[in-house]
Length: 209
Length: 234
Image (tube, rainbow over all chains, first blue to last red; front, top):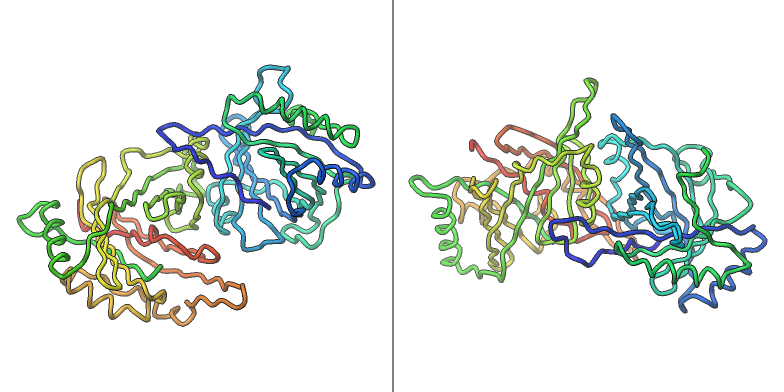
């Protein structure tokens, strides 16, 4: 898994608000090769990069309101790489004509004591899964094609079971708040992937649980 | 990266904190130490959880930064686990402000110049809380060695020559672990090792904790965890 972006702007008393712009879709397993072939052609010329990650989702239940969610991710293919901790805020409710889902995003690279540390903070693991697939880049845009697998025995990443017969496709950009031209660029790129995959704005809060 | 020791230098009788610091600077310069460009700084912020249960008393969370590794921060719970993270961890704690409150008045800062004397690096810091000078810390690092048990006697002798008798003893856990504390590189494999020691830190109130961390691929660890400063009374 690639390292999270390091924000280069100085923190001057306030917070750095990085936003994640996101479009999602899926393809059936049979269509994977065609999609990868198209992405190799459209994206930056680099060695194809695959990843195998283990993600744990932690919740901190407060006295009121929704629980605070943090996602801790580690690479199974590069065990010595740092853990990646991610906070994703609620999707911005704003301009409905905006083409991508926009939410606040904080990425932190951490040492390997992260699970124990989160437990000490009061977080409890809600669920975990294994994600493996391919990653492509086009400028600031990142395209990730992921196969998600359920972990059958907690903590055992060898014993997994595929969740579905399809791959999740995500097109995302990390940019400072206010750069709405980003979603236009994403929409243009997504058009080039049709009809292999339809990438759209999917609000996670509207999903049924 | 070497072996560091941080100790507290008591203020000289009849002198202020600044005067004692100036005396130490003069002593180092007379010895032949060369002042390095710029100052170093270490700071420590305290957070306390807002939600507590009677079954689990709340533990304070300390978050430390050091100018030696400006893009990193170190977080540790008193008596509990520690975490090394990048600077965005501070942004995350702001998001968590309803769960962890920053005790703003308790931010401890330590700033001062750095000196180099042969294989030793000496940092003399004035410790302040809310801009009020509370004491003096001295960090002595012996750069060529990474095994505390192998160079402790040399470091102790050097520290005694500049600080007098105010030199801590080597924590007993090092005498047990020194045989295990070696980094070896075999064709790209790095052996991780865990170092644990117990240090006492008195910060206005007495808090003792055991600090443990794992040093793996990030060979350039910071000495922020070494900033365990003993003050007898403030």
